[in-house]
Image (tube, rainbow, N blue to C red; front, top):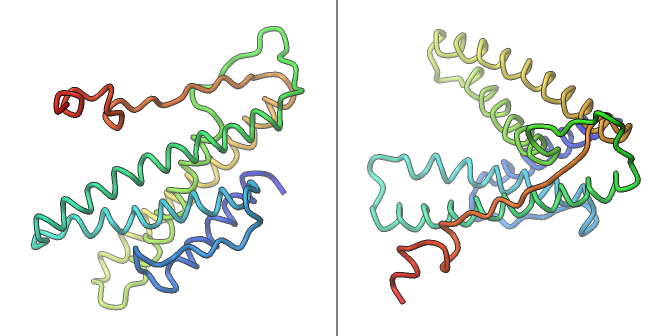
Length: 201
């Protein structure tokens, strides 16, 4: 089984588990061995699922401003947690392929493998929710038809992205490409780099 296929299956399980309660405050019950790559993939998608629904909630035009601000802060933290997990998953890839020797002329990819995994996780959520919309009982037929068309495009994206990720990992393993990971260094979260924050001192 390819890493892409394994990841997507784990993402689907996380999405199904989240929607058992469909509640942003539901505790995560990760079924995989702690610190295994499966554990981190499940946790990654769970964070994405919670954030997906927080993004829905904050767009309620009748939301209380104080609640909206609290959710915005929560989304900010979620984004940082998501970035940290992506970097951790890239560390797994770096370790997995540490013996791979770059061939002469080997090239670097525009994104690291873990950022492709991140996109696959979000895509799994898009597919799940578009499927829900395509079959929503109270939706108009035109709405369902439009969502079915979008779902077909998302499924094609899934196929292409899964294939591209599998190819990238194979290229790294065989030395046709090499990994070089840069930390995100988000400045707005760092009190020493955000002038609004360090100006408060």
